Amino acid sequence: MDDSESPAPTNRYPASDEWHAVDRYFASTLLEEDGVLTEARRSGAVTTMPNAEVAANQGAFLSLLVKIADAERVLEFGTLAGYSTIWFARAVGENGHVVTLEIEPDNAAVAESNFRTAGVADRIETIIGPAAESAAQLMSDCVEPFDLVFIDADKPNNPVYLAAALDLTRPGSVIVIDNVVRDGAVVDSDSADPRVHGVRRVVEEIVANPELEATALQTVGEKGWDGLIIAFRR
Ligand code: DHB
Ligand code: MG
Image (cartoon, rainbow, N blue to C red):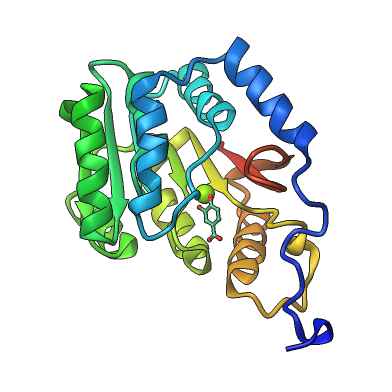
């Protein structure tokens, strides 16, 4: 294949050395990614989506959101190796509870091993199966509402996960959606990428829902160019 047939680069503004250096600077000053988290990050390499976990400063951001919102119950769509799950489990404290939904049993096994190493396995429930089905089960079980929901699974299903999150939260809850910028692809209304459609459709649903007040933040760093939606349920 000659150059003209090469796939378009996915990152038009490649993650620069400076982005990495800045992430490393803050990860080594403001935050603490301890050995347990570093190992959980490394173990992401053996999951079905290597390198998809949040960066350390993003994990710390999620942890701060939990604390600012005084959240004790967190629901996560998409576990992989459980890196963000450990940040959540630490943030909710020993009386808190985290439910994390993972479709791949092998990923869940990696995550559960990380939870035991982190000493937080007792406050995390990992549910294996398609996240939409697991969430539907939580709804039919009428579980207590969650204070914070992190949507970070297969992107085409974002609208399904938002609908579930609305069913499983209360006014005052926080909903965070990962990977909404995708190297800027989010602005392409003609994108053929179903993950971009999943983001754009969830944005439309948020806009159409008077119960939700939301914003989006772009991020650069070790994870390239991406971003998060943060929504508050009025
Ligand atoms: C993708 C998913 C993620 O959760 C992530 O953090 C990065 C990329 C993806 O679907 O491409
Ligand atoms: Mg993600």
